[in-house]
Image (cartoon, rainbow, N blue to C red; front, top):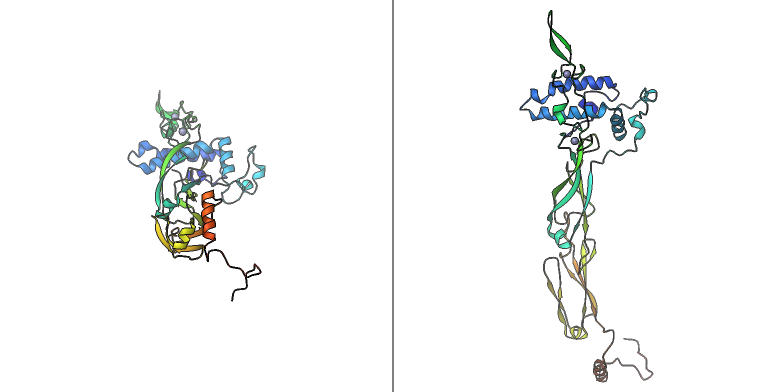
Length: 350
Ligand SMILES: [Zn+2]
Ligand SMILES: [Zn+2]
């Protein structure tokens, strides 16, 4: 709702004394009062800004907190140490205060399948919003309750005396033109409350994992200052049931039996969009890697990754008696077992 710093809203510098804050507020509130601009939402918004700025800056404690939170005013203070206000800290002395609480950071967890095609996710966030009860001003009753209703902000009212009509100070507001302000009970004067929101985040296919998706002005209202921050969404990819990830490439591990190795076989491998079938010729290498081009993870501004299918020959952990007897019979057939020379050694291959 509010964009400028609170002193700018009141057309003041942050050095301005308290009396100027009140004077400026009264002048602006009178000229911007919604009653004078019934069909002008912009004036109403400006009026709310002015009321909120006054609410914060007219109270020593609130002003002090505001200045501590916002070390951004120019020019830097020079003789502030001798300030008459006890407890006043100049804004520049607190440069370690980071005024970016307005940005919200969240992390979204995606399956590889979701990441591969892109997805719109609905997420729930709790964020600070302008308080609806006081229209973000922090003042009980909101914008309607700041100008004295008896004198209409003039500070004086007509009075019929013996010698005619004279203006006398308004008793209701003691001549200030302003009502005495009390804090909104919903937001305890902060002007902000936490409101849960559901936001849709569009994640394009293959969006870089290390690059947050930034939703401008979807963050929350900063403490007291009311700049709205951004919502920063980071992506986290969940582990997959089948695949191991290496950057944009995927690895799938499988095993073939001795018979499949001897006969050759068709190997079925999953991908993120349906299975593929790969051929292993008879008696090829007992373990190897088959590359399936372009079936890894998609990339926003680059070629997609590849799928690598790692296969190995499966050797059983143990054999049953029946298996053992069959294997022994097989072993005794000519050409099955490796041949050694008459010393029992293997001669070097030519
Ligand atoms: Zn409120
Ligand atoms: Zn009055």
